Length: 462
Ligand SMILES: O=C(O)C1=C[C@@H](OP(=O)(O)O)[C@@H](O)[C@H](O)C1
Ligand SMILES: C=C(OP(=O)(O)O)C(=O)O
Image (cartoon, rainbow, N blue to C red; front, side, top):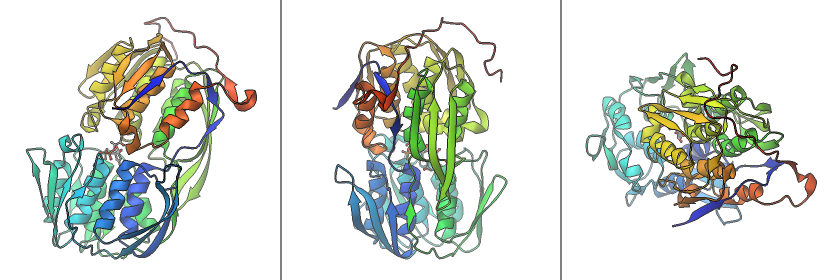
């Protein structure tokens, strides 16, 4: 079992370029594999999760030529050749590893195929509910069977002719929205999904990139079935959910200035920037467009952070950033409230309980609720031994917490980081070592611990 040891940070590097976006990388290989023809994908994220999606499409007839690899020999530039929307039945069950996105989006794609497919996952994925995709797909005429009431993996998707539906999502989930839209894409008529709050819209944008029209009217997203996609090269921007770890590290360091280069700035994902600004960070960005996905450089200026309230419609926009935002809250003056976030309980681990446990072990007072937590920040954190609970975002969030703790923080069970951020440890080392050149970074000004319970009048009153 691998572990990461973290000491107090030495300096903030001047810039970091994070790897490609995970959500867009999954979708890029899935949709390219459904086109007739070849799509070159640049800056693909070669993480375990995205490689599961690629292998799944290859097992069903898509071809992949690796054009460039990263330092570990993993593909970052690929040519994916598909043979149209009718896939070939895979010879063996599809292994989705740790990836909820693979299993849920593939369920939508497979529902409209003329064969049955079994999908498996690791221990964590096998505990996660697939009923949320089984239910709407059943309304469309497909059957998804699995284990127990929550229809957990292994699941079998019994594909066939579907009917179009209008489906109101019971929870704000881009994965469920995408599964229904992808099934609707291969069905006669108009399929619509009504979202309780806007969720990440990468499916909509990437389908449009491939010439497939998806329309939004308020919180309703619709697709007409039968539209043929056209292969078209694309570039994947950097993952803002990976950049979030460094954003918080810089934001919590007075005097720091960090540039995150070429990060995805899709407005359905930039909630982290709004929250950090509310907490007192100064942030600027410059937005460019690449294949319908905004991207650009983000500059973070650190300062003393203040508590805030994170909840409501903002939650889907920061869902994967909540563990690192909880760490930011622990470093901020005052009491931060995270609410309306019960979806965190069904991620790779129960992220509310995992964050609360680990913060408490570091000496931070945390009150846990069914849908969130209250974190009293501003005290010096204590270095200790923590587990990741096998969850990549917990592992990385607490590595950042360790940069601000007295003594050594050891995070155990860190292999999971490769599911979303290969190279995380190399980038973390930039914070732990002295700069090679003195002008390579802004110096770290020591944080002054706040008095516990002290409140700021400027604190978010909502
Ligand atoms: O659609 C996607 O790519 C994702 C959607 C979110 O999950 P939910 O749809 O379950 O909220 C997010 O947590 C996950 O990391 C990726
Ligand atoms: C929840 C996540 O991913 P997935 O649902 O694809 O496993 C994540 O990356 O934080």
